[in-house]
Amino acid sequence: MDDLQYSLDLFKHLGRRSVLPLVSRPISTICQAAATGDLPDLNNVQGDAIYLFPKNAENFVFFRINNVTSFRTALWSFKPTTAEDVKNNLISIAVAKANARDASSVPTVDIAQYQISFSRAGLYFLGVNEGTGDVRFDKRCMNDDKELIGDTKQWDPMFVKATPDPVNGSVRNDTGALHGVITVAGSSAETCTKASHDVIDLFGSSITVAGGKPVEGRARPPPYKGHEHFGFRDGISQPCLRGLVIPRAGQVQVDPGVIIMGYPGDPVRDNPTTKVKRPAWTKDGTILVFRKLEQSVISFEDYVQRNGPRWREFIPGGDISPPLNKQEAEDLFGARFIGRWKSGAPLAKCPFRDNQKMALDPDLINDFDYVVRDNPNISQYEPSDYHCPFTAHTRKIAPRNLNPFIDAKFLGSGSLVRAGLPYGDEVTDQERRDVASGSDELPRGLLFNCYMSDLDSGFVRHMIGYARNDYWPMTSLVPQKKGN
Ligand code: HEM
Image (cartoon, protein in one colour):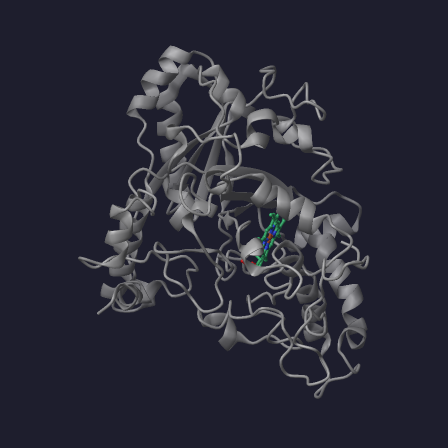
């Protein structure tokens, strides 16, 4: 049995998960690659970046360091969860599921997982002055680039820096800077809360927790688990890191260095001409981008309900048999925002009606590239929006296929591993009534976090090159303005 079949069998009870470890058999190709140094050292990579923490709750403890000496002492006792640990956690969960009599009797595998990340200001504060090789990270904090990435609204005060410098970057100015974040992920809210307290106790007075408490992310309750607050299943499309992750049909395959520094695919390591080098300590590291994104769920629902009746405008030819009912019409309007139905089924493959079967099959849900193959009048040789709008979220933020204009390798080279979780309470009928009579919606949204080895190739390219690019898609010498 080869590694792939062995891994598929091992994890068959975690079939809905989009990232599953490729587990090596003895004398496998993976072992050989690891021996030649081409694969990240799973015992040296923090756990969320490659395999994603299995979690129902996640707390982000943003902090400033008060005392470098006592912080360093506490850090020696802090044990981050490694990618190897996460692999083993996933095996434990798979085994518990395999041994359960039925779905209702699966015991919860109680897990707490930890990782720590530093801002550039935090590294300076600790006396680490060497550059990381990521030119943007080494000069600018996100607050410096707030306008560049298109943020027009007020930020949560916790993340606002008193002295941003959009021209020169402000990482050298420590005033009001966050020094880092400890991520604590748990199998339940209770486990996560307790583990967060333990971690805050461990660092004690060596840190001040920004905002006085962790920022809490929670999976939505069943049947919405795995769905973000607008109702759409999230976390489906993730890059497959070659040699480390089980490749599923349609998944974009990338070299591990796209996410983990110091390996093939890392644009700094791979650039023979650059004077910028990665210091040795960055090997097996990654860059975390964190964003707290508020969602106006009631307004979104209202917008979809008001526009659903326009469905005939969005169906090529203007009609479909049998006609869509009210709910189907609203669902279609919403799906055209995202590029997927709430179930996760891709609009590119089921453009008019949801398809639950496709949504449940890990080898169908990602197997699309936006090429229209079912209509002889549509060219397969240039991008078409016949099935999915160019401006749908998934298509705009990760175009997948801009043949023949942009090489798929370029698109893959900017991939992100996304690991976010919703925050805030569920909408209630009472809140809907309150909002109808003029109250504000309660705060809720997405704690978006993602990993990449290089900010400009990853998150920045997604925001500036794709999401904020009104001339989209870039598929001619004179791209047309399509809006954002
Ligand atoms: C509140 C804000 C956001 C919501 C509600 C949201 C929701 C979603 C949903 C429902 C999907 C489809 C599920 C999937 O393919 O995994 C998705 C995909 C994706 N999102 Fe977001 N997202 C948000 C913000 C962002 C931001 C800021 C980025 C920035 C880089 C981003 C990057 C992506 C990427 C790369 C994909 C995968 C697309 C693909 O490969 O097909 N998202 N998002």
